[in-house]
Amino acid sequence: MKKTVFITGGSRGIGECAVREFARLGYNVAFTYFKSEDKAKEIEKSTGTCAIFADVSKSEDVNNAIKIATEKYGKIDILINNAGIDEFALFTDITDEMWHNMIDTNLSSAFYASRAVLPQMISRKDGVIINISSMWGQVGASCEVHYSVSKAGMIGLTKALAKEVGPSDIRVNCVCPGVIDTDMNKHLTKEDLEQLKCDTPLSKIGKAQDVVNTLIFLSEDKSSFITGQIFGVNGGYII
Ligand code: NAP
Image 1 (tube, rainbow, N blue to C red):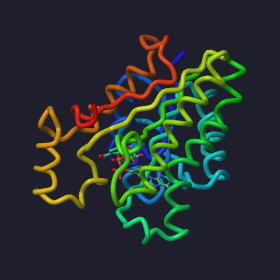
Image 2 (cartoon, helix red, strand yellow; image 1 turned 30 degrees about the vertical axis):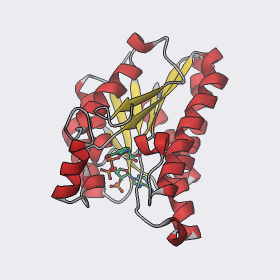
Image 3 (spheres, rainbow, N blue to C red; image 1 turned 120 degrees about the vertical axis):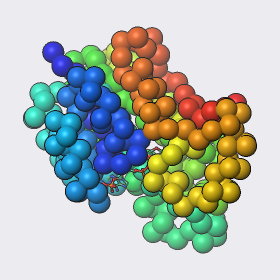
């Protein structure tokens, strides 16, 4: 029986690449989109996947999306908590609204989706959850404290949940990308990108596919003895 993967934020960037690659490999794929409806519908059509609207910062939207995907495909085997935003601001300029929007979109979303999908995984004693954090969640970024906190939270969520659901044969792992060529880094100047390349031992900017290759490995039975782990995909930027 085909496995089903549910990916949050599949309309652009790393999530879009994951949707396309898992579909190509023969998985059933359901994914969420928020603002990029036209793009999501185009991806849905060209890949034969299922695009579902959800603002992942809202638990009712996430619960509804998991329900729709489960009804369509019968079950969800793999959950990838990918949707996220970033924002640059001095710490003292971060408003309550900015703080809560960041934490709710990047971290609470993973709590909501994992909570919604776990009952079916626990009853089957089978499942995989992968959280997308960031290297800034590992080491912290200046002028991105709220982003760094949300991503550090993903690491804590991964480790604690892996211990709790391991006895039910559910694996929970975390991927921390470095600088990846997506819309999220569109604001960077050519000079910024050159500097980032210089600071990276492999002297290049990563591609969404680099992250997705790790997601595929962590989804497959080849990684069946791996849980609670944090994987850097960062060209050596963080060692
Ligand atoms: P991206 O190109 O900006 O795409 C972000 C995705 O998240 C979009 O599909 C977007 O959907 C979705 N999203 C944002 N807010 C949402 C919300 N409230 N509800 C539902 N979906 C929402 O970003 P990316 O580079 O692919 O990043 C993917 C993940 O990797 C993020 O968690 C990010 O923090 C992490 N990451 C990225 C990098 C990097 O260098 N790119 C580095 C480290 C970590 P819509 O367009 O439909 O709104």
